[in-house]
Amino acid sequence: MTLDIKICGLKTDAAMAAALAGGASHVGFIFFAKSPRYVEPAEAGRLREAARGKAKAVAVTVDADDAFLDEIVAKMQPDMLQLHGSETPARVAELKARYGLPVMKALSVSEAADLQRVKPFVGVADCFLFDAKPPKGSQLPGGNGVAFDWRILAGLDAGVEYMLSGGLNAANIGDALRQASPPGIDVSSGVESAPGVKDPALIEQFFRAARAARDDRAA
Image (cartoon, rainbow, N blue to C red; front, side):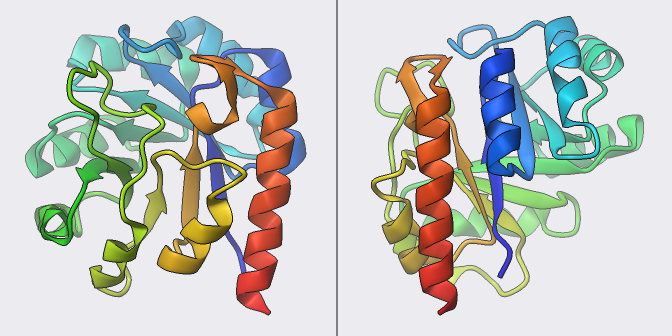
């Protein structure tokens, strides 16, 4: 069975090379100034060239205004937008129409009731990313290395396309796949040696663990 794997928060050629060598389906670039993974749109545009024809390049934004999004789309030429803020279904629809790009809407969850937030976006967002709610005091909506109870995703309506995110790493990806059976997974801090510093060796380990877990699940 297929399993989409997104390596998010890329900033260097070495990390990009490791993500592509591992077979990433998606590569993500963070355009949120408070994040240690922030990258300038022009630099993201340079890095994403290596992914053309290999992986979908995703621009990750947090309540970005049109002017910044225009710059990102022009300089990076993403294949997809990921909206990781408080964007409404109307905003998602507006941006899809403005740029002609698919949109992944990120939603933070901690309990089964949080999955009700999906419903207004169904038929508007192309897919979802479920992340853990940020710990108290964090200024980052994602990339906090925090997991949630993956078993609550069993309550999702059939046919909802999504990626599982939040605290994933090589040690726990097997449990995540067994408990949630997600169609896609997203990792950022779990393949870093320090905040914002992707480690090619950890990226390779993650791919190895994810594939082993996927194969076990399919057996």
